[in-house]
Length: 258
Ligand code: BTN
Image 1 (cartoon, rainbow, N blue to C red):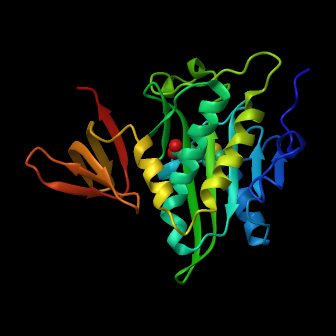
Image 2 (cartoon, rainbow, N blue to C red):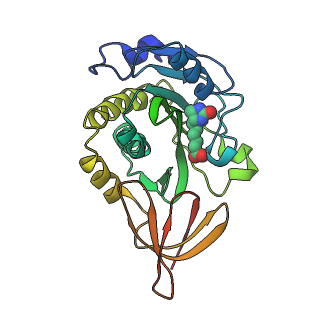
C-alpha cells in the first residue's frame, strides 16, 4: 500500500535533533515561504518545516514563479542562524537536495551556481533563501526547497526544454524518501556552522559551473567568460576573454557547451 505524504510519514522515527521534528503540512497553499515566515514570527522552533502538497503561488528567485502542482517536493525550513552563517544556507540546502536525490533515485544530481539543482544539465530543483533582518542581526531565515518529483514537464511549454522531473513508481511516493534524507543531511551540515569551511568545500566540489564557458546575467550587467572559482560568500568569479577576473554576486548563469 502506498504510504501517503503526511507529517507523520516524514517524522516517524526520524533521527534528527531538530530539522523536521515539527512538520506543518498543507495539502494546498499559496507558498510555503509565506506560511513559514508567519510561523517564524510566532517563534516556532528551529527546524520547523512547512510542507505543501501543492502550491498555487510558488516563488522562485528573482521574483519568478515556481511551478508546484501536486506530486512534487515543496518545503520551507525555519532557521535562526548567526549572520556569519547566512552565505552557507544556499550551499547547505543545495547539498542536502542533491544528496537526497542521489540517495532516493540513484542519480548524480549537480549544482549550478547559484541555486539550481540539475540532472543531466536540466533543472530538477531550486533553492530560495529569504532572511528577515533587524539592524545587523538575523531575526530568522527561511530555506525553501523545490524538487520536481512527479511534474508533467510536457504540460508546461515554458520549461519543456530546460526542466526535468523524477518519476515516482506506482505504489511508492518518492517524496517521503527524498524529504526524510534531505532533513538528515541538512542538519548534518547546518550544525557545523558558523564554521562553514567543510560546507563550502563540499558545495564547490559539487558545482557543475566551474571551468565552463558561462554567461552571467545580473540586474545591470552581462559577464561572459570561463567560470573560474567561487568564494565563501558564494560569489562567482568569471575570467573574461581579456583575462580580467570579474566577481558576480547575484544573477543567472547560462552554461555554454564547448
Ligand atoms: C528557484 O529556482 O528560482 C528557486 C525555487 C524555489 C522553490 C521552492 S518550493 C518551496 C518554497 N516555496 C516557494 O514558494 N518557493 C520555494
